[in-house]
Length: 277
Ligand code: FMN
Image (cartoon, rainbow, N blue to C red; front, top):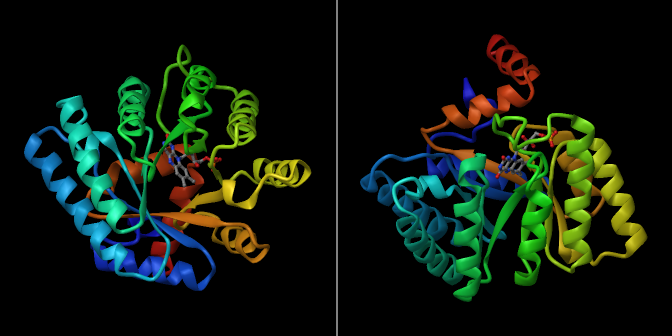
């Protein structure tokens, strides 16, 4: 059922999906599905599987890039545990020339996620970035606080169900803050991933980077596996750097649910795919 949005259950299937994307000029971001673990043993198992993923990815002749979640590494059990797992992953990633993106989860985890990210930068890791969500009221202030660290950021709208006290509910406000966050980070000269399928935002950002002469290596477009493949290919053909986020693994349910919640038509695509066999 989830196969429209997930590359498969195994690492082998995920690596195959990356090869298929590369043939279309799109790079892959591998994401081992898993989050909100409730035992140290599970957190260690995920950490080991991510190390294995980085090793395997490192043997492919493509740019290496993984995404992970801190609650997958034990954040809810202990911030120190999640930090330690991150340093181990970043050491291995450095050896494999792999970039690591810390996904942003729901609002109660934002402070701890940003604390760990800053701590990693202070410890000298350069192959790591995180995410800011345009729907959060706090994100502009979070960006200002991060700027002295020269952050590498992915900007997204935000995928979790949040109360109106913490998140904007109006799409126009979210879109406006989205553009403001991307521009601010790029104006500060920091690498920025524009992660959305929203054609209005993409069109506006293409115009803005051209007008400002933003260096190509500072920005890229990112989309999700199985969503707007046409747009991914078209941007790559136009010469933009494009990456697709490729989730794999057995723990697909929470990811799948967020995709349905943000766009109920996604369920229609899944059912149609099933009926067509
Ligand atoms: N949402 C989050 O809340 N945290 C994330 O870390 C996150 N990572 C994403 C990575 C990529 C490459 C993309 C395309 C989206 C990501 N999202 C994340 C989901 C977005 O917040 C949003 O729900 C989704 O892109 C649909 O909105 P759109 O209209 O911008 O496409």
